[in-house]
Length: 204
Image (cartoon, rainbow, N blue to C red; front, side, top):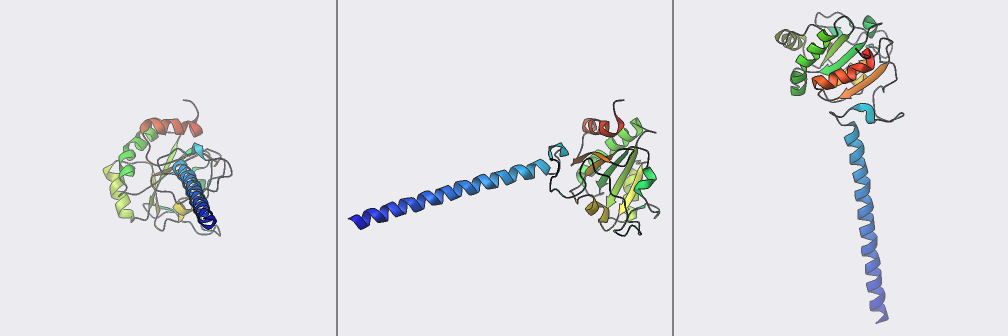
């Protein structure tokens, strides 16, 4: 009888321990999901704390130059094959967008980017970096949509990787001093664009 009681007690302890482990595991997974949600494409980056382990440059850091690791080879060119450097935009607020012609959200926000660019014409530079596509595809899209801001070509995704390798579209707002003042991961509405442009243009 005593042995039976001991076996029942041991079984109950094992079940209780198992339940405790399951609950702890679920709580851990739930925490991970919260972290992923905070940095998922489509969410504003303001939720990321200083010192975050998230890849890519953070707000408050200098925007990486579009050069190879030895700073010798340009990694970005325009539609005509000419090198594009971050230094080309020195002294002017710069909005960098990573995009591709096949990306539906990129297609949908292109006209709003153009409208915002013209609304702040003379005070804002826009650099739309097309990722891993031939120049012909990017050129055709730009002509069709009357995009008259700078289009850069990143055929190997080297620049996209340098800036964090986020899903597209991704937006970086760089001050006239070359420092990243804001960033947004995902598609933006016209209203969101104006809100984030305040970080580099100030109140208008």
